[in-house]
Image: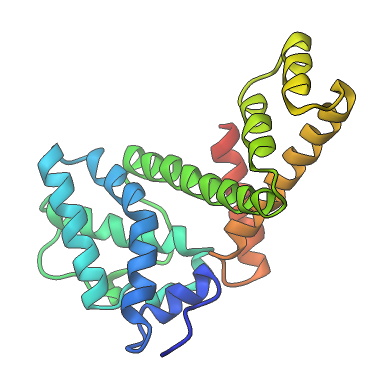
Length: 220
């Protein structure tokens, strides 16, 4: 049996290889389906958006589109947006005939702004969840899953001094120690997020561009 790809970028590449095509594509499709659906929902009615998502995924698998991701576009996110843009244009009657990868433009210009923003927002959520899942597994491996979940609650909002004291009591640590642990968790979360993003970029230059874009989405 062929080894399963080690990273998401290798999954993208191997989604076009017969021996690994089905498991690699299935894993990618399961993760990014919500982002794809959010893109279509900005321009199509509910049922049409669902149908478009299913059709897009079926065509992507049949024609191994995702395996043709071009590193010069920056990342899998950029390539996937281009595929979605072309498919949406066809569905809205802006073009005729089947889409091929030869039809792809060289830049991300002319994307439907609202649809692209919806995709980006969902994409960031997916990456963040991936980063959180990775961290939680690390904490769970050390028998500290409860600690992670409790501290994560504090990261969602600015805790008051009383909130820190209560959480410290719950975790049986002093407040100063908890404050240090929270700072470390924030740093680890950023590292984990960077790792999740790097797996979707073909090289370091692509990662640097994509990280800057991700920061603008998060803080925009």
